[in-house]
Length: 105
Image (cartoon, rainbow, N blue to C red; front, side, top):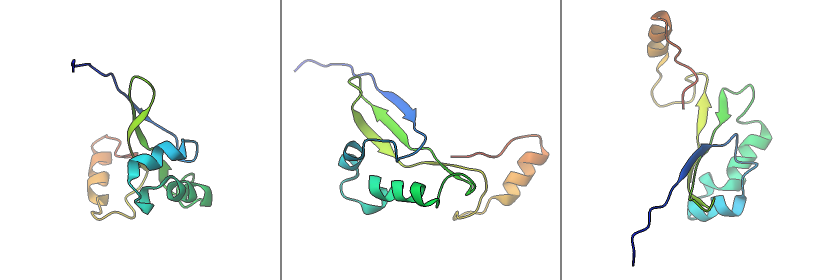
């Protein structure tokens, strides 16, 4: 078997709702919390999205045939709520030093 290089393309989508659900679910191996239906329900219900501080930004990896070969849910955050480590102090210090802490992935 000859070695063949495959180019991949990494993209960040604007949400799960507009993605191919069957292709997404094929990668999740039945985990309900990363299923297309669950992630779309979060978006459609307004649990994430405009005004929540959680902007959907799923990561997609496609092969050179434009087939989805890897994916991960992701969110751009504009605050530090709902995290295990509260980094408000870090954010404040960075902003005082002239940096822009948010949005973060």
